[in-house]
Image 1 (spheres, rainbow, N blue to C red):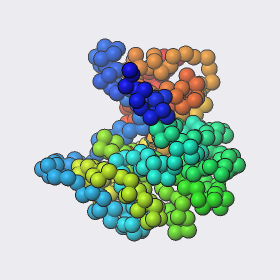
Image 2: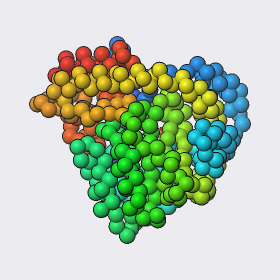
Image 3: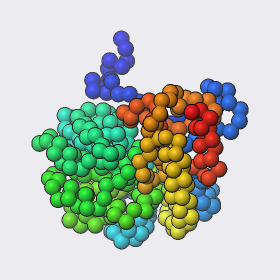
Image 4: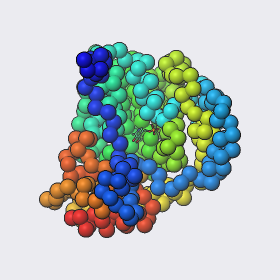
Length: 365
Ligand SMILES: Cc1ncc(COP(=O)(O)O)c(C=O)c1O
């Protein structure tokens, strides 16, 4: 007997998440001795600020004790930060956990979710794990097509995921587009705005979705400390929504879902949020530099409002991602995102890292 045959039928075909290749794994596999540059997972190239490091060290003395169960203090501080009430906030083990909780709380097996494609690679995984149907709506000019998403709604649609800006394209939907979209979405469908990269956005017409919280009980905004705050490794994200939706999330979460060190680090990050500006400004400058270079080489690169770029080759080429890896530069191949083998996504690194990436790419081509 195979143990897998005892699994719930809908789970037997789940393909586990494959992350960007970790540095140590590549070193072992390819026997690379020199420096390896990982630009594959949209992480922040900088370490967390010193204040976070110090707060973490102090918190370590307490890790024999369970954390605050509902991330009470962080909720209050996020509420102050956003001009909301603590009841509007929910904190999760990464914003990924909140996505998972939402699907588990609101969609029965056989229910249906709509999301753009390509978009965040966790969406199909979460749907598969929950045994629900997912409808993928293609992008137009690398942008999310809200009008077609609206036309795709069926009586079974329970939830819509809008990744804004979108991973892996870096593009965004505007304030006006979102306004129009929300005016047509039935109130019994929950709309998730996944804004993991919102700190990097500089476009004036990017929507401030918080303004819909008072009028729409069915929307939830997901944000994270993983990206701009350099805390991916601690797993902490949060949501902003109507308090009733927060209550539902508390009903399905595990007792101590967010660890103590992560809560402390996030609270410290929020306290010193002004320190992010320099890094965000540098990211924007470097993003434009790398984009222009890639376009000059012959790639199509959608304009990005994030800390990464999608590169789609306009020339004959093969095995770019593998050859880059052999030379110690890890970028994310886009085949799992449905974008063809030779397209890749590259995270914006420190200035010198971006130059190493470009030099290596030119060598490979
Ligand atoms: C669009 C999007 N949403 C959510 C996440 C996950 O964030 P977290 O680390 O908070 O779970 C990512 C991470 O890559 C992402 O790209």
